Length: 343
Image (tube, rainbow, N blue to C red; front, side, top):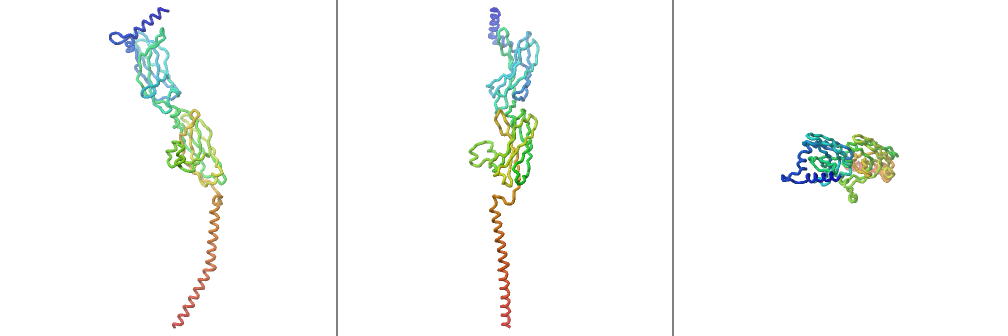
């Protein structure tokens, strides 16, 4: 046992020592055992396996015990490193090249929600079984990779179609809105749709995305009232689903002759909802009886105006016209009398 340990320490000292030419035994070994090719996909999905191919060349006569590891680097400076895949101990025989495939997985906790592009790199190690240690032989080139996460892919869930009734009968306060949702993202999405009544449009629609309460005080965002909300429905990746949203008008809203609605789509990620899309606005007409409660003054004014007009007509026919006729006869008689005097 002591002899094996002594031999191990001796060979380790030889491995890390620097001879006159400046190259240690380890450096010489690294020049002859190296990674010649590294192939990783351009895109990966967080939480799902993807293959990485690494080609190793052993230009020595003797076999080498090697391990290959694939790391994920975050940022331009590669300051954060995560192990995403590793090939177990493998014997690389002399004077041969081998290509191995490593199944890697990028966990969602290893990436940032606001970033999509990362770097990956393969590292080749030599294993010393009698020492229980490993030595870095070579590194591959750094390759960029786009990592798709649920947060980045949520914006690919959108509203495809909205079907809504165009007119409500008098006294009808309930209706349904049918919304077709498509998911073009790489993840299944848990969605739900809310239907709002827009009482006052936004002066600057782009400001609504800021969600600042101070903007509401200045009237720069739309005034909305929720009419209905559907249940949460899962939509599979690459699929579509139809959501039914029951809506109900309150008593104060049922007196409106027409109103504008809009469907808003939300995606649930880890218990938090994010608004990802909204539909175009739709106008619904609501039939009302002639004698509206809020327009009773207009009806009274109309009745009085009609009575006044009728009174004026009666005055003209019964009083003014007879006076005009009598005046006309007297003028004619006076003219005839004057003509007789002249003659």
